[in-house]
Length: 439
Ligand SMILES: Cc1cc2nc3c(=O)[nH]c(=O)nc-3n(C[C@H](O)[C@H](O)[C@H](O)COP(=O)(O)O)c2cc1C
Image 1: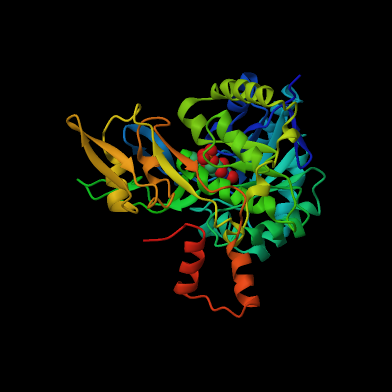
Image 2: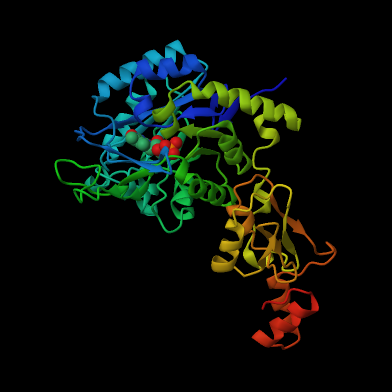
């Protein structure tokens, strides 16, 4: 029996798939429809101060024929009145008692204003509150959103205003537009938050029309930076989630967000410690129905790996993350080309020749060029295998004897003990002794 249910900071849901606070969670109509299709939870589109949106508000980053690998927006928080939203939230929760209904909030930085909105939100019967400290445009100019998330002291102060009156779990949603995500995360912890959501959108300009010179999205000839989301941001989100998950001082449940569009993305975030995952852009592109594949894919994968609950694999990959100084310098791989699969496109040769270490030769055979790796010169960078368009044609094969290990930190410690200076000559001697000469 596979159990997909999760508990993220006290917020329970039948599966880890939540909708992120965004246009798909703007109304009861949408959230109820999403729950019907299988979403485990939803973070309501941020409610708060009166706002007015502009047209156009979205810009898509298309690449090589693929639409919206990234999505930029200059949308604000909900442009529907607070009363209306709260009423619909209460109705939705009554209809779906087992789904997680989380309400995202953003109001002006006044204690009484926060107290009031938090109490009214709790009265809806919702399961939790998410504090939007991430919106990088429009609201930040008014001292809200990322203007709070970027200053740990504000983050702590406002979170305290919320946690001192909240009787339900509070998640703090962080902005990635900071130099170190750990500080706002620790501030949230110090203010007794129950969990961290990340990431909100990344500051960006999505592109410029080369005929009109107009920056997109264009609002009657004006434009500006917007928040970037979608598949393209996943690697950044994975890194930031892992940073928060590894920090012993933070030590809070995580609801991961950023570029999640299928079950595999979700598994990656859970392997880095997330208790739930939130999706926005993929739903804006393909609709609520994608959750069916996500549930099926996750269930099948868990079955194939022998996992019966999310906790069985949550955080499993975290222990691999370490400092560069602790990597084994003697781990040696070389590229091997499967000549039976090679289509002689020579992309590996060009990439190695111009962009890497010149260790692939072109040898004329029967009217075409055979690509052959000079293994003694190959530094194991793996660029050739990344550019190769044929699945598993180029593999990186481990060639060291797997018995030796020496990290940079260990080597430097040895040098220190032996009073040996760090020089190119001493490093070359070490490399030569271990067959890793650099030409
Ligand atoms: C059009 C749009 C509107 C958004 N509005 C909000 C919002 O009101 N509150 C909020 O916390 N995040 C908002 N977000 C950010 C998303 O919740 C999410 O953090 C971000 O899009 C990254 O997830 P994704 O890559 O799955 O889209 C918005 C994102 C988009 C694209």
